[in-house]
Amino acid sequence: MAVDDLWTTADIAHRLSISAHRARGLCDRDDFPMPIHSVGHFVLWRARDIEAWLAQGRPDL
Image (tube, rainbow, N blue to C red; front, side):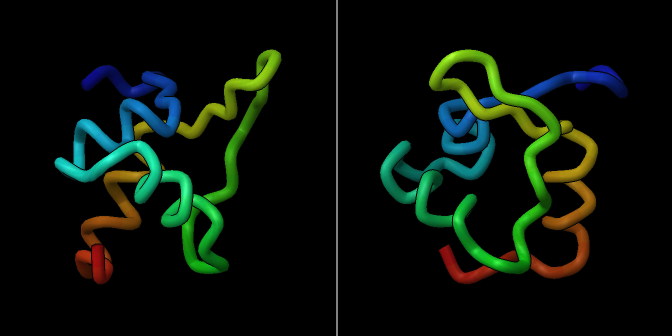
């Protein structure tokens, strides 16, 4: 993972080994990192933000 990698919900799903549907629900949680950008219908998060969120304690998936 590069410092500036950007992830979609599909990338998040792959990283967490969950379905894309479940990843979209997870991304809607209040405690989930805010996306930094959207391109068309793609919403993008910084990979490092997601990894930091995971390091705080793996959420109920």
